Structure formats: structure tokens, C-alpha cells
Length: 278
Image 1 (cartoon, rainbow, N blue to C red):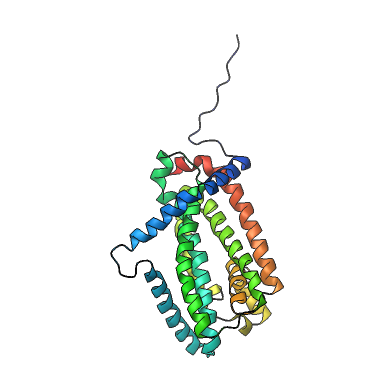
Image 2: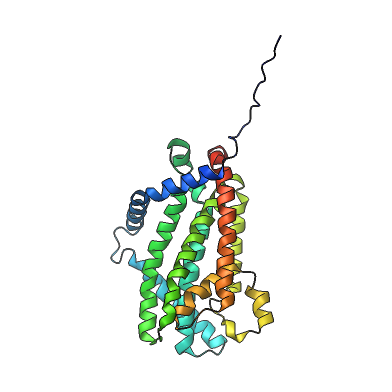
């Protein structure tokens, strides 16, 4: 008399594979007209019945940058002609990066109904976060252009590095959403931890303090471990007419590679279980 082996009953789906995770990301990228258009109309509807519409984003950024530059410029005894562009470009880049991290961490939780009821690639929700934050970044870039013109920032051949900086920041934002979204769906406390860490990172990232004012030991202790510091300098230096240092380029590439490895591994393994966690 033979016994039939029964498969174990588990409350969750089996772990996914890297191949399935990559296929999910590919399907999400292929649907770019859907998530980009949806995000664009979502931003427009947020500012419905206002005179300036989404340009309020630009106005708020401009006011904040001017206030931040005046405050820390006076406190730190900086030359305003060079300090205002430094702070403005730093804050625009920092806001784009942290905006994707913050929104990406809650991307799965905020779309729980769609995930549980509508089949489709989960990467779409990470890409929607990227689209929304990039649209806001595009409005903030108006501030960048104004600052560069008003303060006559010298631009040179170092601008060839800027596309690399934009690409690496975009990759980190998307991949960060891919693993933070499922992680927060599984452990909701992680969302609060991410928000707290980002508030602290504002002071450990060279947004309003100048890296050249510190010694190598001080810079390594304050920002050497911070991936956002490398990416921010890679973004800001070309716009200030400066070539990024080798340490900045290597740090940006290494931190991006580590983020991609973590993101692909965790997203691929957890994507089948996200619906059970919501």
C-alpha cells in the first residue's frame, strides 16, 4: 500500500527567482506610457484650481533654497556668490534622491488594493515613484537654471559627467523602491525607520556644508560611508564647473552596484509574497 506524499501548506507563496524578477522589471519598463501618463495627470490633479499649478513646486524650492543659503552662509561665513549655487544645486539633487527613497519605501503599501486585485508587474509601482519624483525634479531644475544664470556659474567640459550622475541617481531610486517597497510591506516599522534616517542624512550629506572646508579624516567620518554624498557630488560638481574626484566616481559606482545587487535579489525573492503581506 503506497502513501501519497502531501505537499506542505504554507501561508505564503514560494520565493521567487531572479529570472522572474528581471522579467517583472522588463514588463514594467515596457509599460512606460501607462505609468508615466498616469503619474503626470496625478501631479496635475494635485494642483487643480491653482493659478501656478505644479509650478508651486518650483516656487517652494526657490524660497527654501534662498532661506537655507542665507542662514548657513551667514553662520558659516561663506562667500554668497559661490555658496548659493552650491546649496541650491545640492538641495535640488538631495530632494530628488530622498524623495524617491521616501516614496519608494511606501510604494507597495500605498497601492495595496491594486496589487491584490489587479494582475501585473509590481515594478510598475516603483517606476511610478520614479516618474513622480522626476517630474518634480524637472520643475526644480528651473531653479538650477536661474541660479546658474544669476550667479554666472562657469560651465565647462565637466558637464559630460552629468548624464552619468543622472543615470546613477535614477537607477538607485528605482532599485531602492524595488526592495524597500516589499520590505516595508512585510515590516511596517521599516517605513518609520527610513523616514528617520533620511532626516538625519540631511546633516551628513554635503548639502549646506562644503566638503573642502573639512580635512580628509573629518570628511571620511562624516560622509565617507554615505552613498548619497557621493551621488550628490557627482551631480553637483559638473554644474559648478568642477570635475568630480576619483573617490566620488568610484564611490558612486560601488554604492550603485551594491544597491542593484540587493534590490534585484530581494525584489525577485519577495515579489510573489507581497500580496500576502498587504
